[in-house]
Length: 323
Image 1 (tube, rainbow, N blue to C red):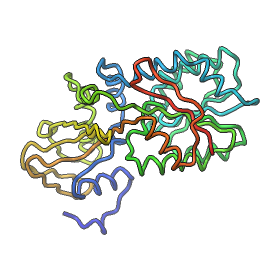
Image 2: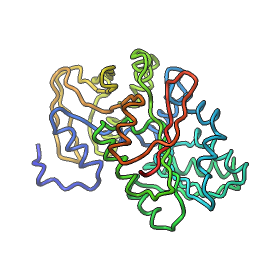
Image 3: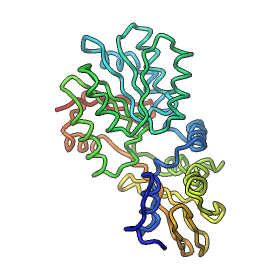
Image 4: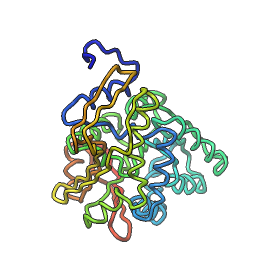
């Protein structure tokens, strides 16, 4: 195994794969699930009957679009509607269509790490909403958000849908919210989706479907390492495993080695040994209640000004402003 100090990484992906697989316990970041194949698998996940998050947020945006739009356009003048991790924009289109229909003056600026996703989103929006001003930005959240912030003095409404904040443990979530808060001005708004605590079995079913789509999504990170870093992971030798702790509201995903095995990653000049039933932690999906969200907001110096729920109270979108 090559000494890490002498390894030169060409990309952040290479560096984080190296660090994650040589760490103990092993881990890989869920952000690397997403490539062309991963994007398609996630679309399939969102269409699964077990994956209640998408339908719940669809319901919220559709049911409350008038009230949400009133909040977003409450101040005079044009604003930038900035979406972090825009994805395919299916849910956001509910708001976009409503805002365009009501002649609200805004520019939609979707941010995503995947250029493939942004290309598809821009194409679909040009077809469905030809009058929409859209300026896609490829990159990480904060670098791109900071760039947008320096573009002009327009008011910002920042969207972070899909309970993506749930991929962060509470200390990381506070840091994330603080980072966004630091880029907000007094009249800016921050609209965030938080999946709620509920029947533990409902949560487990959403992240471990019987059709195996979520398993394929998690294992796609191994396929990507095989393809991009010339590795020889045998996906059949790994088990996808999901756990949920109702006390902390934390769901975790793992890939578990079914046997003792070694994997070579040629591009990193690296050999990784696995013991039987050794894990790679791939994802966290945090669940919340009002008390936790209020605590996170207080720590990040944000104030909740409105909240919106689906009929079953499975999911909530909260609207924040700077304290």
